[in-house]
Image (tube, rainbow, N blue to C red; front, side):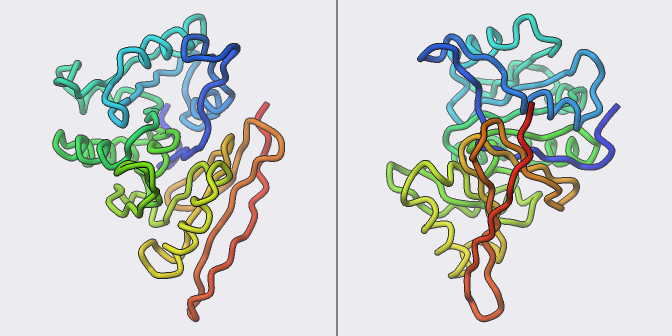
Length: 245
């Protein structure tokens, strides 16, 4: 069964690692939540999109290793150097969850648009496929946010898909420049008058375009709403997430 209404799970949540390095990942509870939101059966179908880091083979190796032995029926869509599935639209519409990895959100959106994924993903969203992701895979669904796609200094990004009519701040607690930049971009109108932000370990659940809850895979991590009023004053409001089991 598809989700009961268009659903997005936009996060700063990645995988857990039992040891340092990318070769011992294990899925956190956010993936079970995505399957639950999708109304998936006992073997949730999830497709991974890794274009934000150029479809790295090492990431796919770690990813398939992480989900080995789980109920998930994992697949992936590569676009480098060419699509690895014959019918992208049919493949993505057959999923319960589409999960987008982190990396360069600017490169991600550029490649998606060349291949028509902007339109395909909107169709998936409207059909009840849960769209989710981490970092670039969170910002992409929004109007925009802050990105290091252009170099180590964070810069504004406003070329998101805009399924969600908000700004988005990921890793809000991890770098000193992220919080003030998001607030500045909301204040000066570069971003919409509302932005939703997540500390590492936090995700946002949207039904349609409404934020219905924040969730976390660790204690103490928070979400935030940054908003601008008619006078141009910016306010940051804390959102306490539900801790995932």
